[in-house]
Image (cartoon, rainbow, N blue to C red; front, top):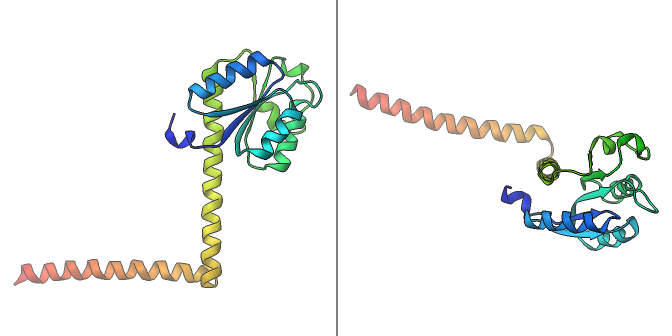
Length: 181
């Protein structure tokens, strides 16, 4: 796993089965992640508020609030936090998700830990790319505000290129004159 992916906050695992919580926590910890666990949506809420959560692994079928409902709550309060759904039930036996992408992003139990890890790495990498794109857009907007508009940025870039080309051209011309003498 690339070191850049390990430099994340916590992965929160929410599942009502204690054995699943334990084994997933140990596996992810061995893979280099910091992990928090919750046995229900009620237990997950304070953890979401108190810690920097980079990703949630959430069971679908749980007593009280199901995983899809918790996922929608997380999306509203913490947009951008990726959610990996897991379930021991077949898709046809699950409650209807509020958003189709939640059911498409489902790993059924029993699962291979390598598949879960691959999915987590993919979600974290996508999140990192999205965050970087937002940062670049924000930086551009900040520059635009300081310079007045986007056209002035283009002029500065063009001017810098022209100046660099003039220097390169002068060196080439000077080299030709020296060899002609």
